[in-house]
Amino acid sequence: MIEELQIGSFGLSVILSILLRMIYGTVEVQNRYKPWIAVIIGIGLSLVAMFAAGIPCILVTIVSYVTQGFMTGATATGIYEMTKSAK
Image (tube, rainbow, N blue to C red; front, top):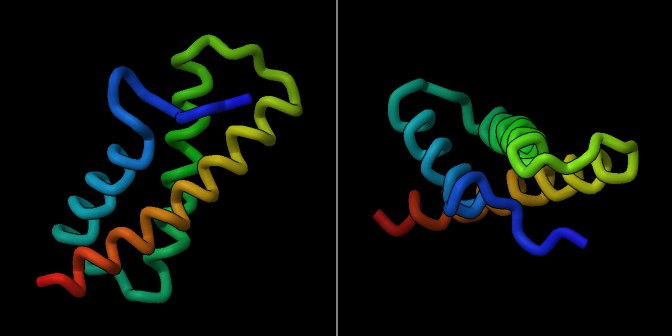
């Protein structure tokens, strides 16, 4: 069971939120694409975390990490929208 995805000592959700803030602050992205960008980057980062942790690449593990990356991306979209509306 995966508890929290991490790259180094940082949680994946923290890294993703920072990356999205940097991307959306520097590149003009239409609002309808922002959730999809977050999900794609979340899935990519989760696979990086899997390889960095040395987890064996079996189908069940890959599906689990991709699912967590999808959920992390969807959550990061909500966090970004909350911080954007707090300005």
